Amino acid sequence: MEKLKLIQLVGRLLGNITVGVIISLFAVLIFITAINYIDFEPVGFLIGKSETIRNSIIFRVSFITHIFSASVALFLSAIQIQPWIRTKFIKFHNKTGNLYTFLVLFLAAPSGLVLAWYSEPRVCFSILAISWWVFTYLGYKAIKSNKITIHKHWMFRGFSLIVSAILLRLYLGIYTAANEEPLSEFGYQLISWLSWVPNLILVEILIRTRKVSFE
Image (cartoon, rainbow, N blue to C red):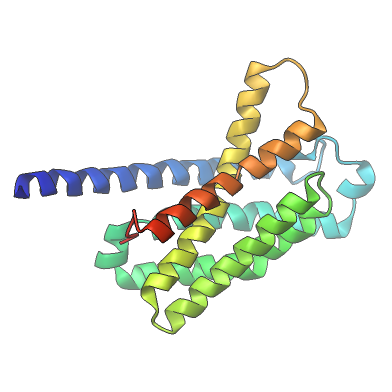
């Protein structure tokens, strides 16, 4: 029985580390790719954006702020979800958590909300940015009140949203590889919603059914 528990513990640890490494690699890749956007030429996510929008000071500041701060926040989230770091290196967890919270509340989420108004899935990305901000704030508020379980729940809800940065790119890449026709506006709307809504629903189910302790 003890041997089985040990195997399960090791399996969970390796699973968490693997997920963390994958998310970290994607975060680094997104950060490096973001450098290509500095000159605001119509490439990647800037394709389809008019010259007027690309030359807008508000858009430029928001865009640069978002892609760099969100990629760093994504990298930090890979650290925050590791149970062994939360238990063995509490001070490190707290410091990286404070940095993550600062990036989300003051940079990534607000700039994401501004960018939502320059995108086609305006409603989708607006709700995403607002929800991410609210979940992070409530998680921060909970830990300041020493409500650890509630803190974890809110932060994992936020985590389900930040991974949309990865899933959106994956879904778009899969579509591009499988289709010669360009993605329609409806298709982009659909993929945008699918990049975060199912994640949040899954996490909410796990929290409410207590299938995962998030320890």
